[in-house]
Image 1 (cartoon, rainbow, N blue to C red):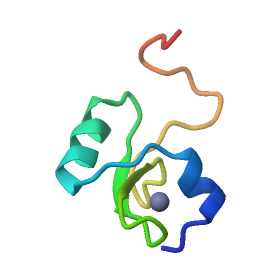
Image 2: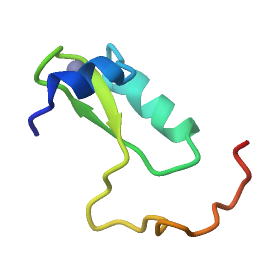
Image 3: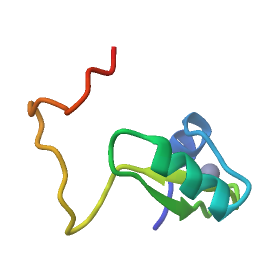
Length: 65
Ligand SMILES: [Zn+2]
């Protein structure tokens, strides 16, 4: 997956896949770690192809704010 530089700079980066995965598991929404080809670090994406995701406008199970 190609990552745009602007996205890379905005995103939280992780030095290892384990670190990224741990952060993904702490999140309330399904996240997937991926290797960035810009910075060679790991970022998280909310894109979960073929997996159950909350529809836009659906009420989340927990109140975040
Ligand atoms: Zn990056």
